[in-house]
Image (cartoon, rainbow, N blue to C red; front, top):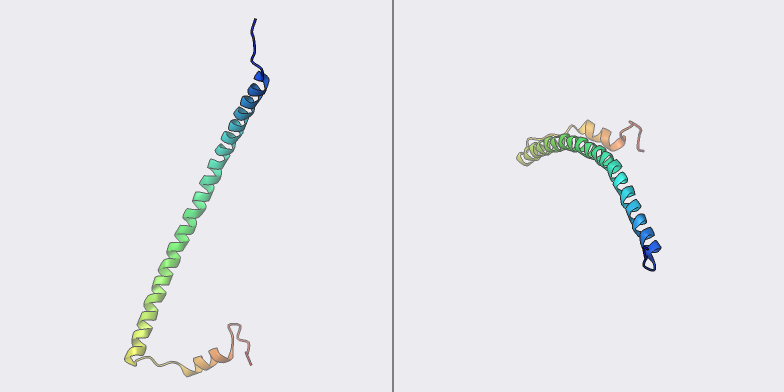
Length: 97
């Protein structure tokens, strides 16, 4: 005759529930790997865009330095008509006044 300890059913139920929880986590983890791969691909694409943005920023910085050098040497002459146009109009060519 098999004698069972008191609370055996509760212990068994708890172990079974823990096992089911692990099984659900593992199933979610498998789906999570696909999600992770998709997120990784998006990050790599954005990194490529960031590198192109960085090169544009670097080019802009070089142009700004060249302009500052011209200003410091007194070689830069602004187009006064363009300056006035920029003061009077916004980007949509609408008068600000």
